[in-house]
Amino acid sequence: MPDDCPSAPDFSLERPGPHPVCGIDEVGRGPWAGPVVAAAVILDPAAIPEGLDDSKRLTALRREALAAEIRLAACVGVGVASVAEIEAMNILQASFLAMRRAVAGLPRRPALALVDGHMPCPGLPCPCRPVVGGDGLAVSIAAASIVAKVARDAMMVALSQQFPGYGWETNMGYGTRGHAEGLERLGVSPHHRRSFAPVHKMLWEGSLVSS
Image (cartoon, rainbow, N blue to C red; front, side, top):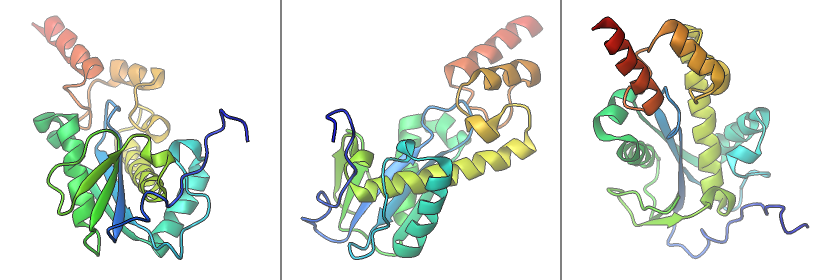
């Protein structure tokens, strides 16, 4: 295998325990609109779906198929932090809130949480170990990244039907040219993160025009 070809995540970080181990990942820190969504997954080592990987390496169809398999074979919790919560507490703290809600939604209490990134999530009911690049290393984190991505994408597609014109059905709230053009044409929706720089700039410029 070439040196620059990433290897698939495996169960080696989960294996030492204590058990059960859940993987946690979040999706949606960077978009201009929509919630941040986290997932927590406890995999059964005897029934790990094949092909688990960082959600960013997978096609949308493959993510959806794997998310369905994960929900059938594993313990899954999903947590959401709303735009209002993001605005009230900042995106990092809202991401932690979504993670805590995801763990609270698990049908079993984990003995250890592996979370993607370099910061442990505070306030969990178990020890938490951060894993940099974890969605490409630990299958439980990869599974969580897939579940969170599929869940949030579905939310953004639903929101795009209520608020058409921003392209959320394809850009998922991220800052694309089409999204920027929609903002210029339609203004700021209730689901935009007003504290985020591009949205805040538009609001500020609008207030200057109207003053």
